[in-house]
Image (cartoon, rainbow, N blue to C red; front, side, top):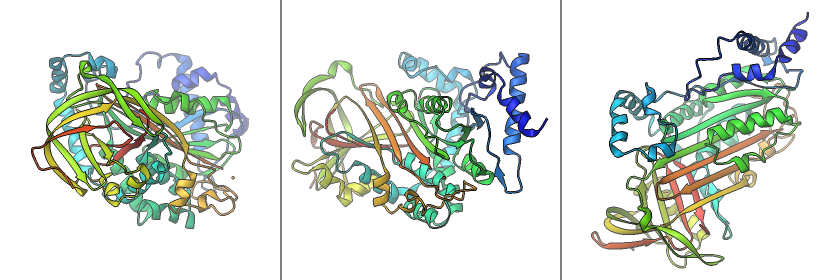
Length: 498
């Protein structure tokens, strides 16, 4: 029997056995103890391991040999750092956590104080490493949000950063340099070190509060790849690696399931539209899932209907109301802002209200606004009492970012015959990136914030004095930026019509 015959025989093993044998946890959910002792599953697991060994066996060319049978399988799944030692800290769902009393919640914190302290030490060791990213993140937000034309619009700048970081590993020469210049990295080595530190500083997952950035690399079984590149992407970006038949139902379903799991099923409608093309050589995907409660929830009995002055005309929407007696109010010419803290993740959501007569596009071009997107110290501030009125909203958007990136200086990678993707592909002549796809959604209500996003890259061959009372009413189009505990923007948006 030849090696190819053996490989094909292994691939003919029952799909459900292999599916059960593959790792499911991504390092965050415990794998069930039962089932792994079943002989059939042990055989399937061994077959899967042996298959991976064949596929990853080093060749003289230093590449991974292409598969010959249509299948979809995981080569490696990212292992995320554990946040807790015991099961008591995991309550199962965000909704279950909301139903617990404050005493019950505090008991859970106390039971796992050591694990939480260990996590905080890791965060302290990595925070601030994304400071040099601020110019890129500002450009990404402004480039994505401008020209909204009365529509709601969302930007996932950190996902774009991680996706471009993976793309830079796949690229070489001038194609790679354009990406590094946009991100602001002086070398690929510097970028690799930064990517891991930024990921660790923004990661948070204790079972109910989450801020998770996940990455993945999807390979075609009809192409050969440079194993060193695959390993680097997996290691530096905490990326899972998959391989299968591009354009097959099985591979698309695996992609959909992975994104849905990593985004809390918030983007199912958008994700269902994603299809990998038979002509693709690979796909790079970066996702975000965030959820946390407000530090000081809005009382539901204070929610009432009022008018929102949308660009398309007045409309009645539900507004949440709250008074903050110790608020920090930010102000400067053209806009004012207020930041509301999330309870446990350390994230802050800033609501940014343009002055009357200032259009959204004018505001986005304002240098002080751009600085404020990543640094609240960039504008004046005052301690005041704020009567806050925020509309509840649930907005989602799908869009393509190819033209945004071209306007920011990344061009060669989109040109067939000009793109150099030899960092990943062994036979990359004519290979290029067709587009950059973004899907995002954010839900803001009395309890807190839920947000999710993905970026996919298919690869083809005058203010008030202190002590004043401010009515901060977001009853006309406004911006928001959700910043992580490390101060980096996770999601930003324009709310033209809540």
